[in-house]
Image (cartoon, rainbow, N blue to C red; front, side, top):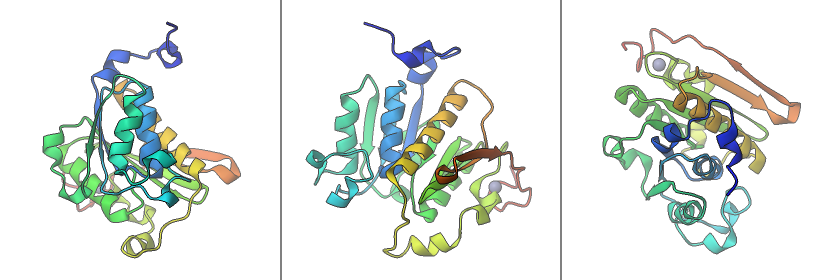
Length: 234
Ligand SMILES: [Zn+2]
Protein backbone atom coordinates (compact mmCIF):
# COMPACT_ATOMS: atom_id res chain seq x y z
CA UNK A 1 0.00 0.00 0.00
CA UNK A 2 1.24 3.48 -0.82
CA UNK A 3 1.85 5.94 2.04
CA UNK A 4 -0.93 8.51 2.56
CA UNK A 5 0.28 11.88 1.25
CA UNK A 6 -0.05 13.76 4.55
CA UNK A 7 2.36 11.33 6.20
CA UNK A 8 4.98 12.52 3.72
CA UNK A 9 4.77 16.14 4.93
CA UNK A 10 8.03 17.22 6.58
CA UNK A 11 7.75 17.12 10.37
CA UNK A 12 4.48 15.16 10.37
CA UNK A 13 4.33 12.80 13.36
CA UNK A 14 1.45 10.37 12.89
CA UNK A 15 1.68 9.04 16.45
CA UNK A 16 0.99 12.49 17.89
CA UNK A 17 -2.23 12.63 15.85
CA UNK A 18 -3.35 9.13 16.80
CA UNK A 19 -2.74 10.00 20.47
CA UNK A 20 -4.98 13.08 20.27
CA UNK A 21 -8.65 13.32 21.29
CA UNK A 22 -10.74 16.24 20.08
CA UNK A 23 -14.31 17.23 20.87
CA UNK A 24 -16.32 19.08 18.24
CA UNK A 25 -19.38 21.09 19.23
CA UNK A 26 -21.82 21.13 16.30
CA UNK A 27 -22.13 18.69 13.38
CA UNK A 28 -23.54 21.14 10.83
CA UNK A 29 -21.82 22.63 7.81
CA UNK A 30 -18.45 23.36 9.46
CA UNK A 31 -18.49 20.59 12.08
CA UNK A 32 -19.35 17.74 9.71
CA UNK A 33 -16.59 18.70 7.28
CA UNK A 34 -14.11 19.27 10.11
CA UNK A 35 -14.80 15.86 11.68
CA UNK A 36 -14.24 14.10 8.34
CA UNK A 37 -11.06 16.13 7.69
CA UNK A 38 -9.64 15.27 11.12
CA UNK A 39 -10.45 11.57 10.62
CA UNK A 40 -8.60 11.67 7.30
CA UNK A 41 -5.43 13.06 8.93
CA UNK A 42 -5.53 10.35 11.61
CA UNK A 43 -6.80 12.01 14.79
CA UNK A 44 -7.16 9.12 17.25
CA UNK A 45 -10.52 9.94 18.81
CA UNK A 46 -13.20 12.36 17.69
CA UNK A 47 -16.16 13.17 19.93
CA UNK A 48 -18.98 15.15 18.29
CA UNK A 49 -21.81 16.81 20.17
CA UNK A 50 -25.00 17.66 18.28
CA UNK A 51 -28.69 17.27 19.10
CA UNK A 52 -30.15 17.52 15.58
CA UNK A 53 -31.74 15.10 13.14
CA UNK A 54 -30.81 15.43 9.46
CA UNK A 55 -33.41 17.15 7.34
CA UNK A 56 -33.55 17.58 3.58
CA UNK A 57 -32.37 21.21 3.64
CA UNK A 58 -29.16 20.12 5.44
CA UNK A 59 -27.97 18.00 2.51
CA UNK A 60 -27.03 21.00 0.34
CA UNK A 61 -24.49 22.51 2.74
CA UNK A 62 -23.40 19.74 5.10
CA UNK A 63 -21.24 16.66 4.51
CA UNK A 64 -24.15 14.20 4.44
CA UNK A 65 -26.11 12.52 1.65
CA UNK A 66 -29.76 11.64 1.15
CA UNK A 67 -29.36 8.19 2.67
CA UNK A 68 -28.64 9.86 6.03
CA UNK A 69 -31.93 11.79 6.16
CA UNK A 70 -33.88 11.03 9.32
CA UNK A 71 -30.74 9.92 11.19
CA UNK A 72 -29.17 12.02 13.93
CA UNK A 73 -26.20 13.99 12.61
CA UNK A 74 -23.87 12.21 15.04
CA UNK A 75 -25.06 8.75 13.87
CA UNK A 76 -24.57 9.75 10.23
CA UNK A 77 -21.06 11.02 10.97
CA UNK A 78 -20.23 7.80 12.81
CA UNK A 79 -21.20 5.89 9.66
CA UNK A 80 -19.12 8.13 7.37
CA UNK A 81 -16.05 8.23 9.62
CA UNK A 82 -16.19 4.47 10.18
CA UNK A 83 -15.50 4.07 6.45
CA UNK A 84 -12.39 6.31 6.48
CA UNK A 85 -9.75 4.99 8.85
CA UNK A 86 -8.94 3.92 12.40
CA UNK A 87 -10.37 6.94 14.21
CA UNK A 88 -12.52 6.13 17.23
CA UNK A 89 -15.75 8.11 16.90
CA UNK A 90 -18.10 8.98 19.74
CA UNK A 91 -21.35 10.79 18.97
CA UNK A 92 -23.09 12.63 21.79
CA UNK A 93 -26.65 13.48 20.87
CA UNK A 94 -27.31 16.36 23.25
CA UNK A 95 -27.35 20.12 23.59
CA UNK A 96 -23.81 21.26 24.25
CA UNK A 97 -24.77 23.07 27.46
CA UNK A 98 -25.97 19.74 28.91
CA UNK A 99 -22.67 17.92 28.37
CA UNK A 100 -20.12 17.21 31.12
CA UNK A 101 -16.85 18.06 29.38
CA UNK A 102 -14.72 16.73 32.24
CA UNK A 103 -15.96 13.21 31.43
CA UNK A 104 -15.03 13.62 27.76
CA UNK A 105 -11.38 14.37 28.62
CA UNK A 106 -10.50 15.82 25.21
CA UNK A 107 -7.16 17.49 24.39
CA UNK A 108 -8.64 20.14 22.10
CA UNK A 109 -12.14 21.69 21.97
CA UNK A 110 -13.54 22.80 18.61
CA UNK A 111 -16.54 25.07 18.17
CA UNK A 112 -18.60 24.83 14.96
CA UNK A 113 -21.83 26.54 15.95
CA UNK A 114 -23.68 29.42 14.33
CA UNK A 115 -25.14 30.06 17.77
CA UNK A 116 -23.03 32.68 19.53
CA UNK A 117 -24.27 31.55 22.96
CA UNK A 118 -22.96 28.02 22.34
CA UNK A 119 -19.61 29.44 21.17
CA UNK A 120 -19.23 31.50 24.35
CA UNK A 121 -20.18 28.40 26.36
CA UNK A 122 -17.35 26.36 24.77
CA UNK A 123 -15.00 29.31 25.33
CA UNK A 124 -15.93 29.27 29.04
CA UNK A 125 -15.35 25.48 29.25
CA UNK A 126 -11.93 25.92 27.63
CA UNK A 127 -10.82 28.75 29.92
CA UNK A 128 -11.99 27.01 33.10
CA UNK A 129 -10.44 23.65 32.08
CA UNK A 130 -7.23 25.15 30.64
CA UNK A 131 -7.70 23.40 27.28
CA UNK A 132 -7.23 24.93 23.81
CA UNK A 133 -10.38 26.05 22.04
CA UNK A 134 -10.61 26.64 18.28
CA UNK A 135 -13.70 28.61 17.27
CA UNK A 136 -15.07 29.12 13.76
CA UNK A 137 -17.73 31.45 12.44
CA UNK A 138 -18.95 31.94 8.86
CA UNK A 139 -21.25 34.32 7.03
CA UNK A 140 -21.89 34.39 3.26
CA UNK A 141 -18.33 34.12 1.78
CA UNK A 142 -16.33 35.20 4.83
CA UNK A 143 -15.52 34.07 8.32
CA UNK A 144 -12.98 33.77 11.07
CA UNK A 145 -11.16 31.19 13.15
CA UNK A 146 -9.91 31.98 16.63
CA UNK A 147 -7.58 29.93 18.81
CA UNK A 148 -7.95 30.34 22.56
CA UNK A 149 -4.99 29.02 24.53
CA UNK A 150 -6.06 29.86 28.09
CA UNK A 151 -3.56 32.20 29.75
CA UNK A 152 -1.70 32.77 26.46
CA UNK A 153 -4.05 34.02 23.71
CA UNK A 154 -7.25 36.07 24.07
CA UNK A 155 -10.48 34.21 24.80
CA UNK A 156 -13.72 35.12 23.01
CA UNK A 157 -14.78 37.21 26.00
CA UNK A 158 -11.62 39.37 25.74
CA UNK A 159 -13.02 40.94 22.55
CA UNK A 160 -16.72 40.10 22.48
CA UNK A 161 -17.36 42.73 19.77
CA UNK A 162 -15.48 40.50 17.28
CA UNK A 163 -18.54 38.29 17.41
CA UNK A 164 -21.33 40.53 16.20
CA UNK A 165 -23.61 40.81 19.21
CA UNK A 166 -26.61 41.11 16.89
CA UNK A 167 -26.16 37.41 16.22
CA UNK A 168 -26.74 36.61 19.87
CA UNK A 169 -30.25 37.89 19.27
CA UNK A 170 -30.46 36.09 15.91
CA UNK A 171 -29.44 32.78 17.47
CA UNK A 172 -32.46 32.93 19.73
CA UNK A 173 -34.82 33.31 16.80
CA UNK A 174 -35.46 31.12 13.78
CA UNK A 175 -33.30 33.36 11.56
CA UNK A 176 -30.19 31.59 10.41
CA UNK A 177 -26.98 33.07 9.05
CA UNK A 178 -26.60 32.61 5.26
CA UNK A 179 -23.34 31.11 3.95
CA UNK A 180 -22.04 28.96 1.10
CA UNK A 181 -20.96 25.33 1.55
CA UNK A 182 -17.43 26.18 0.49
CA UNK A 183 -17.21 28.99 3.06
CA UNK A 184 -17.77 26.32 5.71
CA UNK A 185 -15.21 24.05 3.99
CA UNK A 186 -12.63 26.82 4.16
CA UNK A 187 -13.32 27.58 7.83
CA UNK A 188 -13.04 23.85 8.62
CA UNK A 189 -9.71 23.72 6.76
CA UNK A 190 -8.39 26.67 8.77
CA UNK A 191 -9.53 25.00 12.00
CA UNK A 192 -7.83 21.74 10.97
CA UNK A 193 -4.61 23.68 10.32
CA UNK A 194 -4.70 25.06 13.87
CA UNK A 195 -5.30 21.53 15.23
CA UNK A 196 -2.18 20.42 13.34
CA UNK A 197 -0.18 23.30 14.84
CA UNK A 198 -1.28 22.46 18.38
CA UNK A 199 -0.59 18.72 17.94
CA UNK A 200 2.86 19.40 16.47
CA UNK A 201 3.69 22.05 19.13
CA UNK A 202 3.90 24.90 16.62
CA UNK A 203 2.81 28.50 17.36
CA UNK A 204 -0.91 29.03 16.68
CA UNK A 205 -2.64 31.96 14.95
CA UNK A 206 -4.95 33.51 17.50
CA UNK A 207 -7.24 35.27 15.02
CA UNK A 208 -7.51 34.38 11.33
CA UNK A 209 -10.10 36.04 9.12
CA UNK A 210 -10.99 35.49 5.50
CA UNK A 211 -13.15 36.73 2.67
CA UNK A 212 -13.13 34.20 -0.17
CA UNK A 213 -14.96 36.56 -2.51
CA UNK A 214 -12.03 39.00 -2.26
CA UNK A 215 -9.42 36.22 -2.24
CA UNK A 216 -8.21 37.36 1.18
CA UNK A 217 -7.01 35.45 4.23
CA UNK A 218 -5.00 37.12 6.97
CA UNK A 219 -4.28 36.83 10.65
CA UNK A 220 -3.52 39.19 13.49
CA UNK A 221 -2.11 38.45 16.89
CA UNK A 222 -4.34 40.05 19.50
CA UNK A 223 -3.15 40.72 23.06
CA UNK A 224 -5.18 39.34 25.91
CA UNK A 225 -7.54 41.77 27.62
CA UNK A 226 -6.25 41.90 31.20
CA UNK A 227 -9.69 43.12 32.30
CA UNK A 228 -11.54 40.21 30.65
CA UNK A 229 -14.18 39.02 33.09
CA UNK A 230 -13.52 35.38 32.16
CA UNK A 231 -9.76 34.95 31.60
CA UNK A 232 -8.40 38.22 33.05
CA UNK A 233 -7.47 36.60 36.36
CA UNK A 234 -5.50 33.68 34.89
ZN1 LIG B 1 -10.65 36.56 27.95
